[in-house]
Length: 171
Image 1 (tube, rainbow, N blue to C red):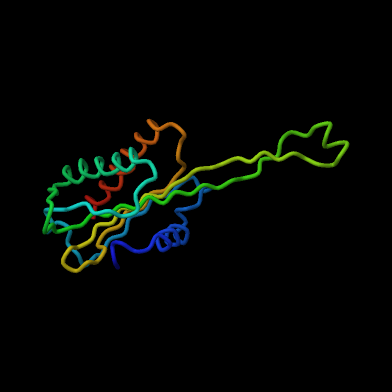
Image 2 (cartoon, rainbow, N blue to C red):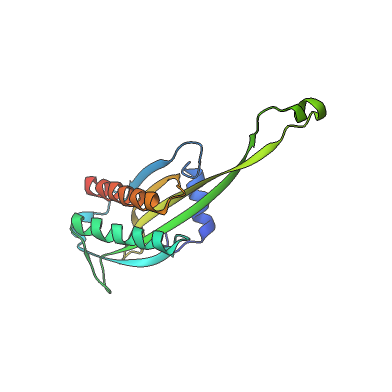
């Protein structure tokens, strides 16, 4: 599997696995290739995937990844790394129609007013690709609602990346 597949593939993957569903309250999953021994890898490099819309969010994701991968025991190098780390941020905005309270207007006309309500969510996909075989050997996916506050999202990013990398340690 190529680390730079079309965006439509990642969206389809997220929806197929149920990670794109806003109403489910988010999701979390990790997959790995049982034939690949991650403990034999000591270096990684970060390559561009599908970046977050906000530069600050993408920077936060990459800095959290670097911190947590270093804690895991991996060292970042520019070239000839054992692993290539690719991130994909898949935003999703769903608009729901929210019925307003019944009113005198509805009683007379039979028309009920509807207010649009936006729910913002996103899926974060982290792939570890074996440089030699060019295969994805580990994938972590997390999805959930995105808050309006930039600070709240940054704290959430740190927690999500840390949780995914802890799962890497368990493999």
